[in-house]
Image 1: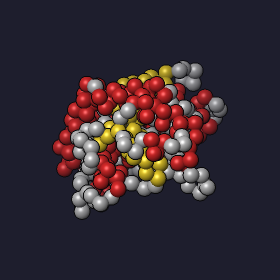
Image 2: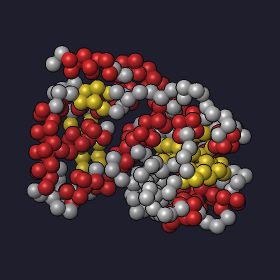
Image 3: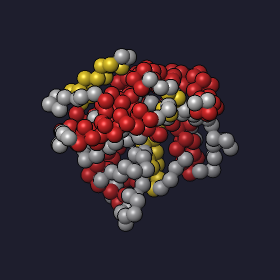
Image 4: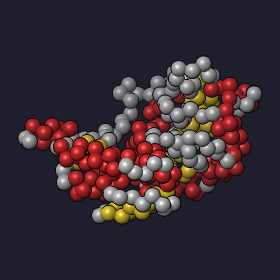
Length: 312
């Protein structure tokens, strides 16, 4: 979806005076709010409209003209209409080359602290919280999220990272005594965790994420629905795909500087973990997983791509 919408936005005139950008072309029909536009386009359209945008569009057009084909990190079973749109609008073949995730080659490491902890919980009972490798919550954002998750009284595993190259310890942003207070129902890990193993574990039921594409693909590939908070780059469009197009997630907040409402976090976590809403999202996520796996033999087609290039 992201690549297809970029293709449209870089090759069509987009009104700079509308709150909602209507994208309707061939097989795609999407409405984007200003806040959901790619950041580069958002700043070009609404801060310094011309001529910078024209230069960007000309550069994109020249690159598109000289390329032979397009490789997309996605699946036909997931985004068939968007891959088709790319082929129709560029007049060149498009290859979805994402690989469905499998169980780790050596299985799940049951000696890891997080896996041992997950093993103590029943199926579909734990919320996994992680905001990627380049997104870091501020003290105010962390506290608001903590209050909402704690108020939901649902079990969780939360991986917290420190900003790269800083002396900040992000665990200092947690309320005093929080880790001790929540140890019966939550696990906070400061540093790296094996994300795929956690997502594959039976007790993991939802993934709270910034909706970076790699994290979203991993979650979809293993059938885990999401609670999303898009912050930068393509995450806004990814979140729209997850919540509105595929129906496998709910959104709690958006924006790098936004602070999530404690009440919204509490209510959404409760809804996903304890009500039919969550069950419906899980069932839909499993359908998406199956559509990905069924199409994988057709889409993991590096060999076909190589043959196409060699025959040019």
